[in-house]
Structures are given as C-alpha cells and as structure tokens.
Length: 229
Image 1 (tube, helix red, strand yellow):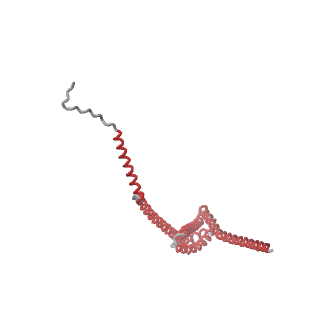
Image 2 (cartoon, rainbow, N blue to C red):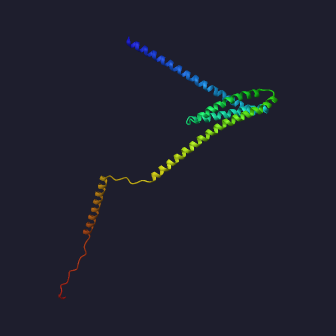
C-alpha cells in the first residue's frame, strides 16, 4: 500500500514538472516571437520602401528614397553600437542617444509616409525641402555615432595588436638566448670518472702496442785485438 502511494506521488510530481516545463517553453517561445515579429515587419517595410524609391519617379520617389536613407542609417548605427556595447560599456550612452534620435526619425517617417501617399505632387514638392533637411540631419547624427564607435573599436584593436606584437617579440628574443643547464654534482663526478677510465684505457692500449712491436736485432760486438783467420 505504501509503495502504491509513493508511486502515485511520484507520478503526480512528474506530471506537474512536465506541465510546468511546457508552460515555460511556451512563454519563452511567445516572447521570442514577440521580439522577432517587429524586426521582421520592419525589415519587410524597409525592402518595400527601397523598392518604391527605385521604381517610382518624381517627388514621390524622392520621398521614398528619404525614408529608406533614414532607416538604413539608423539600423546600421544601432547594429554597430549594440555589437560594441557588449565589450565596451562606454557605448551604452551612445545607444541612449541613438534611441532618442530614433524617436525623431519615427516622427519624420510618419510625415514622409503621408507625403508619399499624397496625390498632389505640388504639395509634396513644397514640403519636400523642409523634410529633406530634417532627414539629412538625422542621417548625419546617426552616421556620426556609428563612425565614432567604429573608430573607437579599431583603435582598441590596433593597440591590443601592438601590445601583443611587443610581447611576442620579447618572448622570441628570450627563446633565442639560453644558458646550458647546470649539471648535477653526482653526474659531474660520474663524467669525470668515466673520462679518467677512458684515458687510462688509452694509455694501456698505447703501452701494449709498444710492447708487441718487435725490437730491431743488434750485431755482436768484435773483441779488440782479434785477428781475422
């Protein structure tokens, strides 16, 4: 009976864990879709606006071109700043400024959208000069933030590479200069003993060669006063 109760409790706990895990996965999936949907929608809008700027003529094509230029500048700057802010926290303030600039760009984009749909080309022409000036200012400011961030990242990369080069050169120089390792005292004594034995063997070998070499025969000496015959 107790074993059955334990099995039932474990089954309930397992089912509860599965339900909780499923709910967590669903919530995360919804959040991911919620974040991705605006990005996908904006990307589709960017493509459509770019296409209209290339295909439509007259002032309406110019308006579409302004919208595309502003959007591209902001998107490019945001991408660069977000990438750099992961390693350089000084770029967080630049991201804050870009967010404020994005608000002005959204307001301008709304005006440009209305002008793009305005059927009266003369009215669009009269409004185009004012909105074009604002668009150029926004593009310039967004581009300035992007260029400054790129210069900052490149400078840090160059400095790090220079330091790494100095360290590599120093290590290479150290590797080219070395001193013989000190021979332990016991090994030195063994080397001296082996050298002495080798020298003794050479001397004994030379002495044996001399002893084995035949000596020249000597003529007998003639006694003084002896006569021949």
